Length: 110
Image 1 (cartoon, helix red, strand yellow):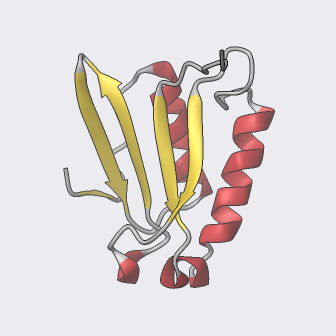
Image 2 (image 1 turned 90 degrees about the vertical axis):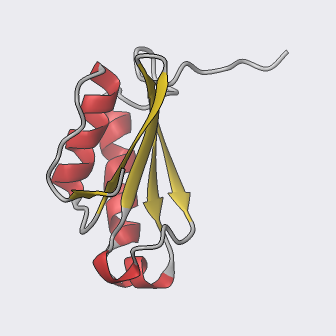
């Protein structure tokens, strides 16, 4: 029987051509290392945030694009962010982990 990790939310960082040209690969690596270091990553004891590279998230002119999905109050909540950077990514990750409201800075869409 496989072991399942409890997650509080899932962050996706676009790795398509336009976002990569705007630093998405560096953003993903920096977030991965920080989630690991701060024990927020789902595979760490007490951690709960999943981070994944993704294909195009559709806002190519405004990258790097980051989106987040989580269950909150019994409903699916999502947040989409343009021109994401390390500080914004960590603010989103910390809010997800703590069950707090998502940041509004650079948020667009639903």
